Length: 362
Image (cartoon, rainbow, N blue to C red; front, side, top):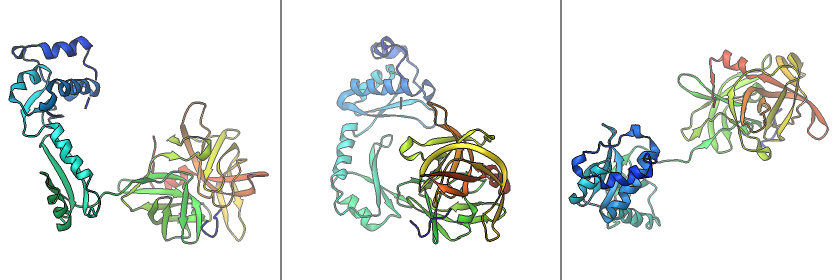
């Protein structure tokens, strides 16, 4: 059914242990905490170091070579305290508060910010504020130099872009019509969006709700009703999710176990959103007219309307769960969601096997 036109860190084991760590003399040689201590223990140690060192605190981090917790300080006299707290001391020039002030200066200078400035951040181990400039652009470097604060300029290859997700049941737009996203899949090299074949037969560049996804890669209709769109834009993510619209938060694909006759299924699409029903028949041959005969479809009593084509059919989620089994992509049917109707879907396993793809799963 095509709609035309396009419509770091675990609580130290026991509070007493945390207090004792700061009271222990340097001669006790407290071993340095490592990444293996776990996030909560490390976070508690970092917080206490920040409080204990006060204005001399210059941040904490994990040494990437040894995994040991390191604590910076502007006061060498604090080294014994740092070791007793389970960290490796490092004397630095700038305190954490000083670096934050430098960063804040940049935060307040965004008027006229060149597009080549990708961002800025505090490099804690290096004890510097870093400005990222795409390709070393002179305008970006000049903006950083004019801030009047000490910064380091780093060159990056490209500017960041917001990531947007292709989610099952949301819109999929072709040059000649609108359909819905079925599922996301991948092979060893690329990612793909799976939808109905009578949608991908339109060919060309395909867009989603957040922008361009890529171009139609493969299509099979009639006989079958499936096709794929190759994801070529780096700002597109392909999570294992299906939109339930106003019926609740997204469900997540756990696998592709088939629901048999009498089983409950739900479908999602851009026109009628989320509707559920039961499987009435498997492996059905459907005549769509004009010689368009499709075999191997599943019949359901879940309604659908034009524009829902290609959208996700999944198992009905159990109470309190968001995990579902992928079933297939809406192919066609009769009736509507006011009076009810019959809807067929193309089983997803067939396209996965045909094109040697793996389903994106939770």
